[in-house]
Image 1 (tube, protein in one colour):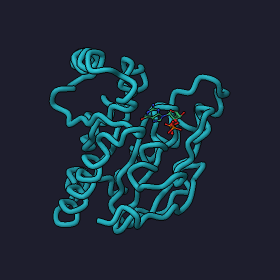
Image 2 (image 1 turned 60 degrees about the vertical axis):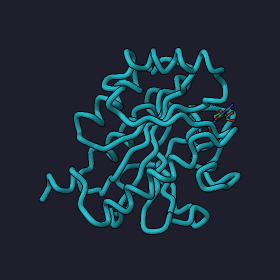
Image 3 (image 1 turned 90 degrees about the horizontal axis):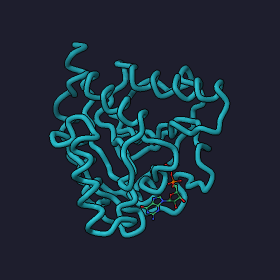
Length: 208
Ligand code: GDP
């Protein structure tokens, strides 16, 4: 796959605006400020395909990107405290609506977690939801460059107790600053695209 071959399509502010599922989708999910936009930009070698923001919580839309024969779906960053209750509700509806819509061909979710900290309550809710819904997912541990070797080892050990099923879930340490993990993420996307265009995902199988 050619990772330069990507195009921003549209931002959707409400779930009902989403286009019909016509392709396999790979989604990116995480707490606001976790480094989701930086990861998307790094992956596609672009400076500002996804907007990196110094002010957390700005991305309250689902953003679709056209990448070869798949859609890359950038979900709104959740958990930002400084927004109104109404706005939080709208975000939750967007994320829940998207992830619960079994008519979509969701091939994989990259669930981002800041490697420096214990996962938030919302992160754990997301992981439990993905497990229960049988949505395949990979955990990306972001901002890896901010930890030295010792602290990194400590966090990896701590995640084993903090994240349910951590040792059974594929995880990738990632840094948008050094590029660590970027090739691994690209490889996972290629594998999933290749696999799903030859056989349906568990969720698609369940429907048929
Ligand atoms: P988003 O809200 O999840 O999309 O997060 P952004 O990509 O906008 O990043 C939030 C902040 O974290 C920005 O100031 C980024 O420059 C910074 N950041 C993101 N990824 C990394 C990383 O891998 N390493 C470091 N050191 N900073 C990062």
